Amino acid sequence: MTTTPPVQDWASDFDVLDPDYVADPFPIWDELRPRCPIPHTNRRVSSWLPLRYEDVTAIAHDIEHFSSRKIAVIPITGEEGVEPDPVLPYGLPPISSDPPLHTWTRRLLLPWFSHRRVESYEQMTRDLCNRLLDGFLAEGRADAAADYAQQIPVRVIAHILGVPPELSDTFTGWVRDVLEFADDPVRREEGSTGLINFFVAEVGRRKDEPGHDLLSELLHTEMDGELIDPAVVLGIASLVLIAGVDTTWSAIGSSLWHLATHDEDRKRMVSDPAVWPLAIEELLRAYSPVTMAREVTEDVVYAGCPMAAGDKVLMNFPAANRDPEIFEDADTVVLDRALNRHVAFGSGIHRCAGSNLARMELRVALEEWLRRVPEFHVAEGATVTWAGGQVRGPRSVPVVFR
Image (cartoon, rainbow, N blue to C red; front, side, top):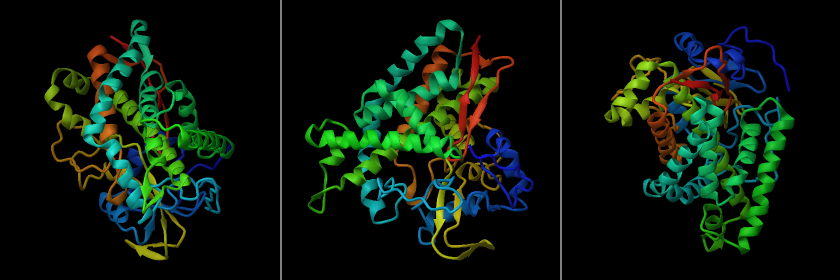
């Protein structure tokens, strides 16, 4: 794995994989925002990191100057910033594409994540949560991240894609390799290869043996009188797995960590069902997991920053959601926060198509946990570990029940 020198000046040499940043980025953002709201770095590739809500949302809507062709926060091939992938010539549409490809591929996905469709997944999700709880409840302790949060979204996504649930652990490994080990090119390549090879085989099989799942439907859908290119279907399927797993388990894990370390918030959620709709949105705001990249399409000066063609702009949605100009007491979780225009699911044309599913999984995961484990806290002497980069969330949260 590549080792990088420690950060000396966060304004001119930030590193989103710095251990201090991964563990607790909030004070770094708070210190930078007034004096350098868009820091720059030349680590890995020339990159900018907007920290204000206004800048993040403005850039998200400017698809002319900021393309979604290369969304990886950490360049896949290193310093040169070139990210070719002959197996996925269309990338991971719609998230890694611009219109018109973005427009029609997103339209294909939306019905699978509509409110009505998501309601049909809820009982399965609730049953899954209870099976997981059954597995460790008698022990009086568990790892809220590894034993619970990380087990839920991957199995729901497997159901949507029509793949065997027993492959869930394999999927989890691939997704972690791709997103979590960004500075380990060997592991990243292994995860990407495993995931793509699996879907290549599934695409071939389901052309002749379609099921009632997203992958089968896409393979038998026509656009302009012709079946969709299998390479597009491969990219969409890969996106659904990658984007639908680590993001949501990070949100669930962060929320459980918060409740394990903030007794009053935990007690209120247990005793006050009316606060739940606002509380779910507040936890999403406070612990937004996802940062996406945009590529500068041509030399442009934005807010006084001379951005060159090919530079990356890291869409720091988590920092935008902590902007004190937009959110009062931005670094405090206020469960009944009424004014909450958070961008945990992004902004602009690339706003997360699976937001309904993510909200349902987070809500159900917390409902079932708090119903059966109303009192818990981080185990004494335990270490809580976090992963970061593209997606920030806890990887281990050892808790004990009271």
